[in-house]
Length: 89
Image (cartoon, rainbow, N blue to C red):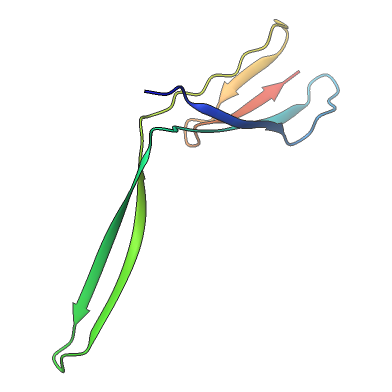
C-alpha cells in the first residue's frame, strides 16, 4: 500500500493580525484508490429505455492533521469537512 499523497496545503488568508483566523485546506488522496463504474437503466411501459453511468472512487480513509510549532496558535479541525481547519493567531 502506498502512502497518501498531499497535493497542496492552502490558506484562505495568508497575513493575519492577532485574534484573526484563516481557513487552511489540505488536499490529499489515496493513490491505491480504485474506480468503480455503476450503470443504471429504466424502462417505461412503452419499452423506452434510458440509461446512465456514474463512477465511484473507493479508497482507504485518510486522517488529516494540522499542527503549529507556535503554542499561541489554535488549530481546530472542521468535523464536517476532513482536511479543513480553522487557524487562529
